Length: 236
Image 1 (spheres, rainbow, N blue to C red):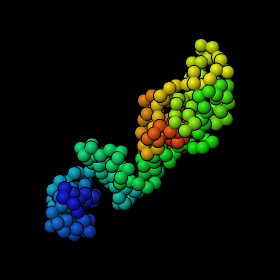
Image 2 (tube, rainbow, N blue to C red; image 1 turned 180 degrees about the vertical axis):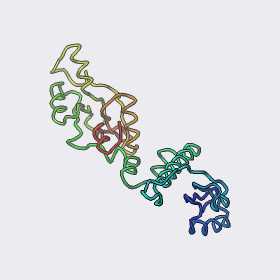
Image 3 (tube, rainbow, N blue to C red; image 1 turned 180 degrees about the horizontal axis):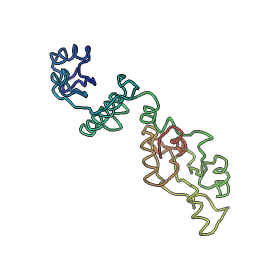
Image 4 (cartoon, one colour; image 1 turned 30 degrees about the vertical axis):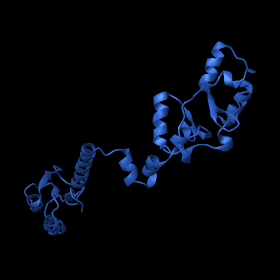
């Protein structure tokens, strides 16, 4: 046990033999005891520092004997205590990520942009002098609805999306004009080391479906699409 820890003991009757035996040992170790029990006058309630009464009523089993209603009520109260403690201690997603590294929850919290982004042929790019018609073909080939515009050294120069295309259509379509004249310059980007949930937050905030992924020098590494996040259970 660490300083500041407390022990939560659950017993509907408050007279469970093993709980009655262990409670004095825990108190001797200096641990505050918090009891959840249906009987506020029980032994467990008396020896505990805090006793929370659980009003469970009759057990659900046909004979009224097997703990069922009481255990469900205790679990609900235990969850309420945990949520209140989370709020008091400022327990956030970073703490969840640290203490729950495995399973689907850990995956959602710990996944990085670099792990989920699309690379190579799945991350379409084009040079700034290429015509709009070529950009449209590249976009159609990957079904991402977006294409990155890069220099020969892969430095990101711009980004062209379905939204940009709709704006082009409103002012007149010039299929042979260079993509540099239609792209969004200095687009929103993200680094590969950033948490995927941060990318999801950015997509919600700015109303976009995908993000170019760049390194510290601004060179294109890949693209992260909203579907990549949804496939991992990360809401965008």
